[in-house]
Length: 526
Image 1 (cartoon, helix red, strand yellow):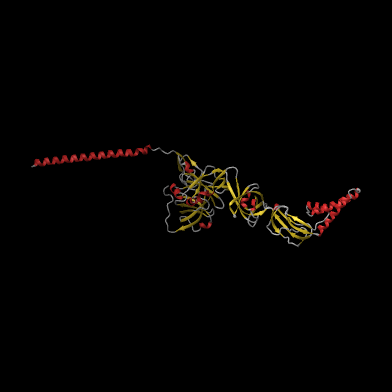
Image 2: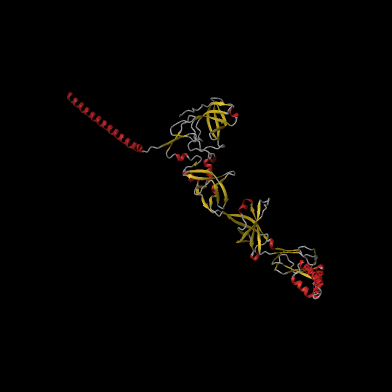
């Protein structure tokens, strides 16, 4: 019995020993595998190339760097800049937008290019007769209208065509005087020189009088040959054209110089175009012009700018420009309205961008230049001439730079353009942050550490400023108004707003004391 118990106890001991050995071996193998896996996982980390430290920069964005770690006057640590990060440090004032958001906004760019800027100046005009081709028929003596050959306004007439006949006692007397003088010269041909010369002077004087009254050479020769004066005188058209005015009525009496007919030659006409004040500098005499008339929508008439008038119409702020047009077939009627196109532009190529790329705020003109993937730089530009689709850039953008031509207003709204523009003169405060302009405010909370009413300053230990990416720190602020210091005392907690009046000078524009709110520890994390 005892021997069986002993055997059983030995078997049990062997089983326990075997189990323990198996368990220890398993733990040893597991530990070995874990260490191998750990070694394998740490291999890439050891193989990773260490970044090269370049320098330490001022945490407030001031142009100050150090080769060794240091602190600024406010106790803030300088920020380390590694190789590859210096390009990002130089992008102060630029706008960063994620690639996904750029695609959602529909941002599209186009390269600024050198091109000859074509432009059309458009103006409204009207057809007018050529003033140099308008003739008035006015007798130079007193008389009566005896007969009308042309008695309708608007009637076409040819050159030399009879218009009307007049009777004048003075004209009849002058004819008789010349006829008698001409006969006297003929009869005294063989007489003494003095008498003959006197008679010839009288005849010449009578002939000059008739010529001054516009008596034709044909009538004068007929009078000298026959010696008989005619009762009436026929007036003829001096040019081929249209009778634009007729005041003569059969039987009426007229006085010397009174216009009885007006005839206009409409083979060539004028277009008087009213060009706006801002476009007149580009219009030059000799330039070609295209004219369209509503009556002939399928036709384009070509003309030439002959004169730019020297006076501006104050009522319409336009300057008349005269365009000369040939008028074959007299299709162009006086007083017709016309649409005038004057091609103007530079003969030499200039740097241009699409008109949609320019944001005009009224006081400045901005263009977004793509500085890299998801990075845009707002630039103020100086513009020159404008074309139909492009505008000349005199300063601000260079040839080959990509500019945003679509969704630029959305970029403006997305990135708070005012803050970016405020950094034109200096680098941004904080890493990657744009410096605020005088109109961009920042909000923070803090505790009053000290007051100087005479200097108008307050020392605050404030919390983080998200808009500037500032950490918690203690610094001095100026106040925009001494009344802002009223109600503040050391230890009080405040909510305040501040702006940057000039680089490095921060001014509080609003301060509100808080009651019952524990102050944040401004030195936490230092």
